[in-house]
Image (cartoon, rainbow, N blue to C red):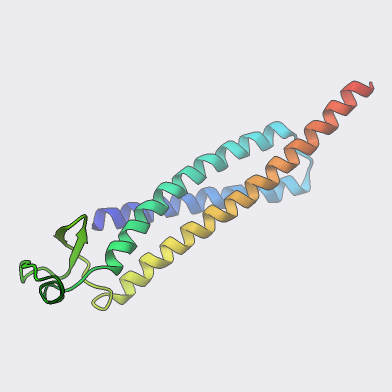
Length: 155
């Protein structure tokens, strides 16, 4: 579990780094004219970023979901009549199988849950912003290529 959170944090740092690179590249591009080939390279980088964001989003989504649904062992015995070890901090159920949830319930660790949920919200926002930016790059590409084609046919 801790490994998954650390992996998610490393993934987010990488995604933020790539995102900042894309924003800096956009700022430089606005100062000078760039060709559609350079935009196409940026689109490829954005596609890789979006794939990594989607992978990270699904991993964190399941962590947040399991954490939100975690129950104490006494609640599991009370609600479902199932016996689980008393030493477990929290219990998570997936597909009818009860397993230990090492982070505890949301009420046991509200700060950790808030950070994990915030990480999920950040990943979703970054995915949406990268999709908007990719759409703008595609629109710029189609406009520049049509201008190049019309210049070639005119001349």
